[in-house]
Image 1 (cartoon, one colour):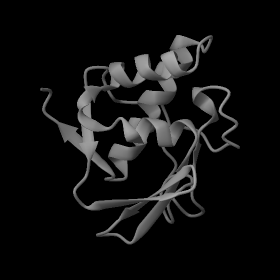
Image 2: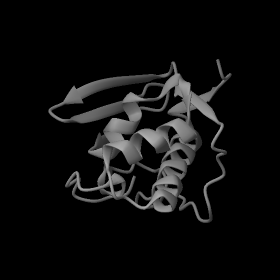
Image 3: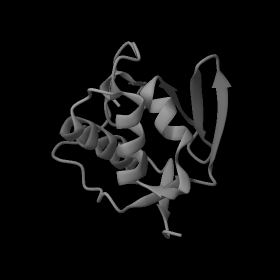
Amino acid sequence: MTDGEGTGRGPGEGRVAPAAGGPGAPGGRARRGAPTVDGRLVVRVSPRVAVARDGDALVVAQLDRSALRRLEGTAAELWARLDGVAAVDDLVDASLADHPGADPAAVREQVAAFVDQLLAEGLVERAEPA
């Protein structure tokens, strides 16, 4: 979720490197406000995306825009769960199970913000729940 060192100590410790020209990048549009995703939302990886492993990190390429994003730590763990079946609430539950003692409200906000960011960048798309 957040730009950080990815220490693995909690869900907010994942590292998401901003895409060139995207939100959080120099000259990019910053997103403000609460995430707009609902806990029942199910997303899947866009077919216009390719993923490669780089050690413990993932490199996500948006093929139609030549944009790259590096995901580390919890961000990479969450990406692996974007299967078109798990809802945002399921991602939150899995993250809480992986990080005992984490604040549930903070995890929910961070996971929702992560999914919201991925949707805005076109890396994932809404899927119909199974």
